[in-house]
Length: 547
Image 1: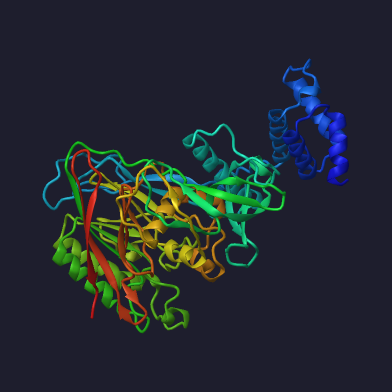
Image 2: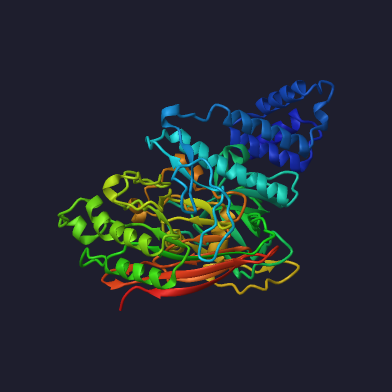
């Protein structure tokens, strides 16, 4: 049935219907594959169930059409139930207490608070949370349900922050502008661009339909606060969840007039005392492609002795499955033996030189010392063959933990590079009452979007070229979510140039790689301090790991 015939029948079944409500009803008939008389029966059932039996259909309004559409969307979504995995396949979070001072055994239920002394890491009751995961391949419906929930959860955040009564459906024809929330997707293998960007809605808000996006020539960015971010536009990438204002006037595309920035994470709680932390951060690989001598790692240990930090954060890979000698079968030792000889032995010596040093090890999906090869990744098992000293703590990938009152987030996946290569940057001016005082560049804007997405890896799907490096487990992606509280320090190692950025109250650091092909790379030494009631301040110093 064409739209003209549908229009005539709807006017017959809904006498006196308003034009806007009529357009919405035509859209519902097309979207839900309903005849006009079926739509009328649905409406009669709705008013009967809401005890509005005496309400005549003559008073069918635009609000009535919206109520009816919500009911139809729920009916469509209802048969798709979330699948709850059996307990033996469930993802469990195991909280491991990290002793931050001498004399406390690993795994002890609490760590006694003591006064912080010069050069000593303060003991705290906060824990390093590590998932114990049984990675059974999920049924597709579990992955779809999680992806759907991501949109709905973000929609609630947007709706509450911008004080919106309701959110629209991007597929519904309307002459009025509405705010919609959905996921950015591309057209098959085509890279995102002006004419190849789509918005995917959730089942609840739009039956999961994908709608082409067009951008108004005068498109703007509305900031989530009075102060602007200093951005000159917005970078769109597959998997990014966005809030858009615009309209679908003809039913073939949603025309965007405004990007609504996702509200930022809440800043961390400010303390009433001075706090500081000196740390060194390095990311693998730790040996050059031509050998397995681990000279850059040896140089790193020498630098630690000179700088004497309180924390050494080591990010994998340590024994890299992509190393040329490993891939060609020229490794004549077990991965555990390589790790013990070139990593653990030096850490044992370092513990004797700096007894108060805390070492945290973050694995990588390419690590041969880890039995978990998917992301998010559980902490490596503390195998005795690895020969690790007592004050080395193994954590998951990604991780959030607290040291000396500073909340730290870290992952070993190169999310910056992955997003950067698939990003479509749309230039648009900001709408704000006050300009940002922070200088902004491309990396700062990208880091801001990662924080706004509230995920250590918001990209979906993973680019084909790097799928083997990531091995994303969608059904366990809840472990990639950041808390509602922003980290004080976020470590995002990348093959991109090393940097330090400040986004709102978060310091973001890329230490780069310890070894690059056949040359030594860099690490970073940082000192982060916070005065009572103030945001953290961080200074960094690059450390060259060889000539």
